[in-house]
Length: 341
Image (cartoon, rainbow, N blue to C red; front, top):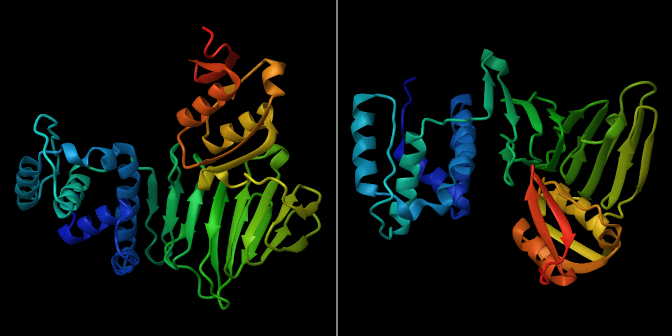
């Protein structure tokens, strides 16, 4: 497939993915992404491969001269781009060269393992985004709305929104930060539920038993409607939690301080049992920690974690209660005897 390559745009995407671009650069990039469906697909594919290849941690170990010459040569010949990354020659790169090199490497990888799917239907193109099992699965829509998807969740939306509404479909869980537009409400369809907003931030979770849907509002106002059976709607305010089942809508104040910890990676425990701690960590890190010792499960734990790795969190817990972990069969088992064995 022939692709018109613009080196400046690759550099800009590299800076954006490294979270080091200015507001003006971010605006420029998003404007380019929104120009057409090809740009958007290319942007999302690049974003996914950033995570898959983990360039952020390896850019200092790339032979830039060799990579640059290979890419230039293949661009001129209009052939499929492939780059061999050599780790034998290691040297420090200037900030500019790091971005340029990363941009070129993103071209060369061929976008393997992409999880973006495209249905081109002239004026009604559909984007389907399937989140990978990683921490960062962010989608930026054409109106500026930012959506963070929980691993293995799926989002479907039109390239261009309708004139009177912005509608998407969700399978799984996602955190929405919706751009305000009173003239064009934002609508999420999820199972038997419709969530309608004008501009706000909130979390939707349909990964629940008995096809329930849970909506937590962090800011703004959200209207939630149960669609099957007798239609019923409620208006929810910041701090509210609504659970929609097949037959009812239940509204209450949220009491789970860690309800969006999977997105923020800020986790707070206040005299919490280790049983609940394990449940929270399994959700936040999408892992499988188990413990069959009731003595351990009843221990109380108080602390706050901010952007820490799972290994770091488990180390703190083990140190606090003299525990240790055993990893096998994709499980992490907590047992007694951390420092005594």
